[in-house]
Image 1: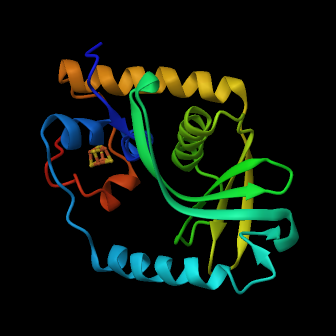
Image 2: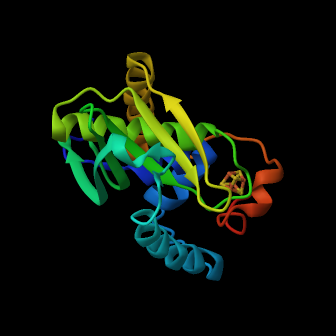
Length: 195
Ligand code: SF4
């Protein structure tokens, strides 16, 4: 493995959307222009950070259980070849640390790529804060729905293998074999991707 190669948490979510996206983004260096919808979500996101301080519940946790709320926590964990910016981290009065990812999606359910993203955040937080992270949360502002994701040691070990696989695609410049499906019509790589 190339020692200095690092991957971002967003590479993991892209990989679990479709492994081919890693080839386009990290091997060919295709950049993804932001869509108006993404810009709107960014603005809404900033407002959501402000609104949370006025609520009785903080991302679904009773206010009295939350000691601190951190936003945009940048962490690099060279031991995992991983870095990323965690949108929100809750420090509970119990001492528990919970990464939260806020999703602006009409699909309010647990998705594999989102779960992997939260496992990656857990690894980063463990590396920086030296505490074990066993829970994470998805939060959907429109409905105020919160989904708790339990994170096990096996999930973290599996993620380390995923990181190895992603690094191998980048280092060996491999175009992964996949089948086209309906998600291709939402994919920014569709116009480059021939199957
Ligand atoms: S167009 Fe489809 S197969 Fe190609 S990268 Fe996107 S999701 Fe994957």
